[in-house]
Length: 475
Image (cartoon, rainbow, N blue to C red):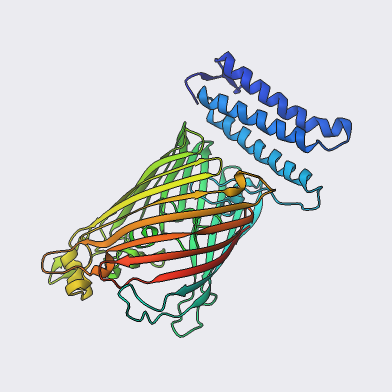
């Protein structure tokens, strides 16, 4: 509730700012007129009229934002604008194509993962999937043979299942199938796993509690990893090697919104340093499977979303990872601290994104001794990674239905072995520069076709270039 808002004896909100109240009444009148008109005159509104209404409502949203209007009212206006936009598309196609309006994602959840929130009661089902073709170059950066073969992979197929018990209690879950099967192929790389499964209790409209297996709120992709949402056939290297994605764990925590801020914080079972390697902490994730919990992890995130199209935020994870292990009678603490800063801005067709992450691992030499790591195999005492990404929707210049054509470029710099303990050496192959460029084509918001190239350079000159094709969907 803003400072200008008070609650009347009946429980309704009363806005003490007459200008803001007038804006709200105007917007409400426009929406009421739109809802009643088809019933009174028994005819569908024209596309031109719908377009004008959408433009008017957007203007009202901008005026509310400039006046620092109530966030809840703004969200309601934006939701109704989305509904009008879907009706506009239907009118343009003559009703021949009944396209489902995309679900608006909850903070920290993609559209498919948010379907249960739109239910009044009962079961919701959603999901996503992606098939990726990789064609690596035959030569490495130094000209030697790469030995890599082209592959095509059903990388992921995911089902979201939710259940709305009441307005205040729900269950949300994600079950993931990787590489098509859990037992096929020479490497038997496939697996079936639960990505998250939590109960949510919302005693307040602006926040509540979660308990179960949750996704840690780090970076962009750990929570929002559905293929139509991120650019490129593969997730960014920084958000795989430096920030492990996906990273779920059993825990409990809080979430909510306050004015222009969104926040989440959890206490979870910590990492297990027995899985750490020169490549980072990703294999130290316990992922909820009989997780050791002698050492706990603490994670939190804060985002500012007070300007339309802008997201600014930071997140952190900290906690020991020894889980009671010792080496030569010496306990291993192995405290991990990871923090990241992120920013995103969208204006019409332009999309800008940047992220910077750093992490440290304590007792790295003891971890090396426990894990049998020598020389340049050492766990890094310090890791870092950052990237910048630019995309532009060409269809914003000349709209044609719901099509989007998004050429993009992303540049990454990372090293999971930026600093190592005394007596160990660095592997130059881990000092990486990655350039990815391509195009994502979306005939509908929930369906994407991707083509891109990745140029990987490292200090050992062992990097390879790869051409990718992918298809992805969410529902």
